[in-house]
Structures are given as C-alpha cells and as structure tokens.
Length: 549
Image 1 (cartoon, helix red, strand yellow):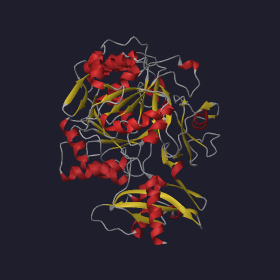
Image 2 (cartoon, one colour):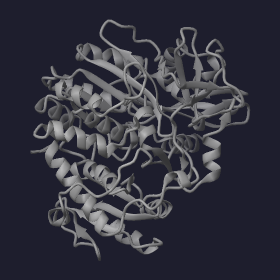
Image 3 (cartoon, helix red, strand yellow):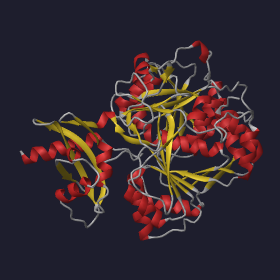
Image 4 (cartoon, one colour):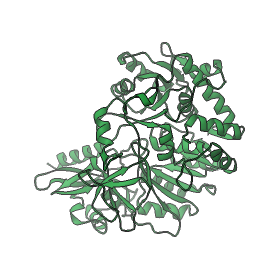
C-alpha cells in the first residue's frame, strides 16, 4: 500500500481527535482543529482554481502537475497548516527562505511558477517589490504577526479566509503520486526544487515502513500504535529547511504533538529550553554544534527540568565528539541521534550515542539502500573497499529537479542499471560496515594534489576545549594550489594559539590536512538553520590576508 500525507493525517485525526496536535506560545490546536483548518485552507485554494492538473505518470521527471504554493513564513501554526492544506487541495507547497532578498525571491517564485504565496506580514514590503517581476499574479494570503502592514493589493487575510471557507473534506482525490516539493539552495548555484512522490518521500525520508523494512498494508498499522504514544517534538530550526519540516511531519505521522518555541525570528537558547521544560518535550531537533553549544551553556547557567527529554537529534550537521560527551554528561538520559541524509536522498543512515558509549568519530549505520559510488561515479564500491567515493541512495528517490533536465540527470545518474541519488557528499566504507561521512564536495580543498574535506578538519579542531566553533576553507597558494585555513571562534575567556590548535588537530589528522593559518573571530556566521556560511569564512580569510600583505 502506498500512502500520502493528507490521508495519513486525516486517519490519525479521526482517532486522536481531541489530543494536542500543535502547540505554539499560549495556544494548543487539537487534531480535530488542525483537520478543520487545513480543510478550510484547501477550500480557499480550490475556490481560486488551485490544485492538480493532469497525472504525474504522463510527465517527465522534472515536471509537476500541481499548482505550487510558496510558504514565505517563519515557524508557526500557519506554516504547518499551509504545508498540509495545500496537499489536501491537490496543490503542492514549497519552502521559501525568508532571508532571501528581492532578487533571490523573484528567481525562486518564477522558478516554482508560484500560483499562491502564504506570506507573513513582516515580509510584505519585500514581497511588494517582488510581485511586479513575476510572470503571473499569485493568490496572496497574509498571516498577521502584529507588523500592521496594509494588505497587499488583492491579498486575503489568512484567518478571515479560513473562517469563511468550508470545513468539509475537499472533493479531491489524494494520491501517492502527489508531490512533496523541497527547494534546496545547496552550497553553489540557484535554488533547486526537489520533486518527491509523496509515497517515496514517506518511506525514504520519514521512515514510514514496518520494522522489517516492508511497506504498510493499511492505515490502521499507523493509527493503532499512535494511540499509545506520548510524543512531543520541538524542531528548533526554521521549517523552511528540510530537516525541521521532515522532523515535524514525522512527528505527526507518529501521532505526536509538534511544539514550536516562542521566539521564531532568531535562535534563542533560553527560549528553546524553557519551551522544552514547559511542554515536556520528549524529542528535540537541532543542527550540530552550532545549536548545541549555546543550549549547553544556557542549561549550565540556569538548569531546567529536562526529565521528559529522551532524544536529541541533529540534521544537516553532525555533532563533534567533544560536544556529544558534554551533552551526555549534562542530560544523561537522552539518546543522541545524528541523521545522515539530504534533500535529494532522504535518510541514508543514523548514528546513535548514549551515556557510557564511545564518543569517537561519527560512524553511520547505513540504510539498506545506501551505497558509495567510485570516484568516477561509474561503479559501486564494495563495502570492503575503503576508497573515498560518492554517497548515493537507491530505491525510493526523487523524480528530479523542477524544470531542470540537465541537473536532474547529473544528480540522479544510472549506474549498474539502477537510478541513484548523488547529492554531492563524499563518504567511505569502514571495516565494520559503517559509513564515514567525509564532507561536501563543494567545500573540498585540493592541496598539493590531496583532497581535504573541510568538515573533517572542523571536527578535529573542535577537540580543543577552547574552541567554540570553527569553519575551514581553502585559499590560493603558489606552492600547493590551495592551502587549508581555519576560521575559529574561541570560548569566552579562552586564549589559544594557532600552534596549539594545530597540535590538537594533529592528533586526529594527517599533517597535510592541518590548517596553514588560523583566523580568529568573535563568532562564526551561520544560517538560521545552523548551516555553515563558507562564503563569509572565505571573506574573513581574504580580509586577514590583505591586512598581512
């Protein structure tokens, strides 16, 4: 049996009607209420002609039969309602990076052929600048946030539109072939819309399958266990990033409650911990050390009761060994789960850590469909072959990138007669059958003919107790072609030399991988999702080199 998001949520809502489905600030929405509101949104979209037009089976892999609904929002109930409500209308929502400037937004909305945009009031002025550049006038739904901007021309107020709409189940066939669309900016190039069949996305990205790896045969197999669960999940990063949205949707599919922190316009460690304590959060999703370090510092400064917390997950970046040890010492009852995956491949492996377990380099237990391609991407490497290659995913993978045949063929090649997703991560098999993630190819440094993965050096530097955060980039070198340079933020009050950092890193790395120089900065620039800003790091290296010239 193949499933889809709308059918699953409706079936769960029938069973869990008055249990909490979504919590934000001082408001709780039950499963019944979320169902009512998402049906109403589907009705609003349907009244304006938005939905599905044609069959996916008749289209090439980079085409979509849906009208696309942009979610230009911060975290909150409207984001999650719009994601689900669009699907119930037969349309497909897509994520919008709210940090984009007008030029970037115009490209994104044109690329997606946005038929509707659900926008937060604080972004009204930027959106007003973008709209005249679009090829079509999208339906606009304004989510009020106290900014008090006037409605943009033709826009509807979100709450008023829902109040006037029908709460009846939409007269739309919900299909496993309906698409889930995720835009990923990656590390280079323009944003790309990854197109997943929902049936494939549910299995490959959210793990909706039986314990033995086989597919479910009925919705009851999801509903009955959900009745017995008590799951409350806080996805701390912005929902506009895949890791957070996948965590939220996974929570709903398991019958749990999605909890949203109070402050959603910036990362606030105190607020996240307060929210965890107040709502007895059982699972917290963050992004590597960039989120974890401030949370640990805040918890040490003002301890909260985190006794309900059972899982701390990281998506988009792995924890350093030192961070894992600190976290388990402070909250010993939790299991730390590093998730290996990408927008183009779904979940490819996990690494679990618990109190008393080793906290060495992260090794991932691969999924059954994970593989490593040879460097030339023409053959598969045997699990006994330690050659660094390309991390790949087979089985249920995306159809392609929206509107881009060339990038689709490059990222989803056919090897040994099978189609694979190759997102650009380098990895290697280890003797125990685990996978070691080496790093993103786009930030690999070629020094003297040897490849150095930036993330590997960053992890080694973080072994020093004085390091708060670090990024590693390459800079031009007459001798080596490129040389490794680290940009480091030290913990407050620490005084550490470049030589001391190199000595610590040398305990974990070959000499050619050690930073030739270290640039010290008060803080490291990262995106709201915690992802590294390598362009900023390169600018710091260039600035320091200019100062020393």
